[in-house]
Image (tube, rainbow, N blue to C red):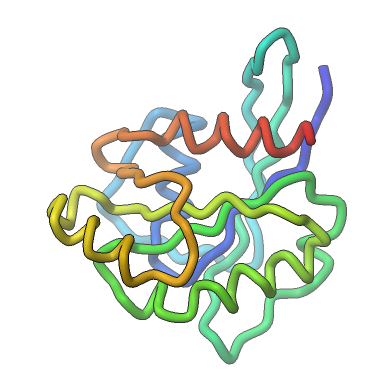
Length: 161
C-alpha cells in the first residue's frame, strides 16, 4: 500500500470539511465548523489494483488577502480546489486562485470541484460553466452524497501520476 498526501483548498465555507466527512465517515452535518490551520484525515481506497492510503489535508479556507503557509503544500501528490456553486465570491477569481495552489504545491494539475449542487438549479450550473474562467472537473453535493466518491477517486488517480 502506498500513502499519498492530497490537499483540499478553497475559500471559507465552500464545503471542504463536509466533503471529507462525507467521504471518510459517510456523515453530513448542517453545522458550520470553521477549520483553523489544517486538519488531516485518512481513508484507504482502491484504484485498479493499487491500494492507496489518502492522507487528506483539509486546509483552512482563505480570503484573497490571506496567505496559507507554504509548508501545508509541500510533499502533496494531488490537490482539489473546491468552490461553492451558490456563492460567486468563491469562484469569480478562480483561475488566479488555482494558479496560486499550483505554484505553492508544484502540481501541474488541480482537480476543480463545484460543491453545494443541492443549492442551485441545473440552469444555474450550466450558466456558471459558461462564465467561469476554467473548466470544472466535478459538480458535487456533500449533503446529498452526489459525486463525492468520484471526486476523491479523481484525486487518488491524480496522485498516482
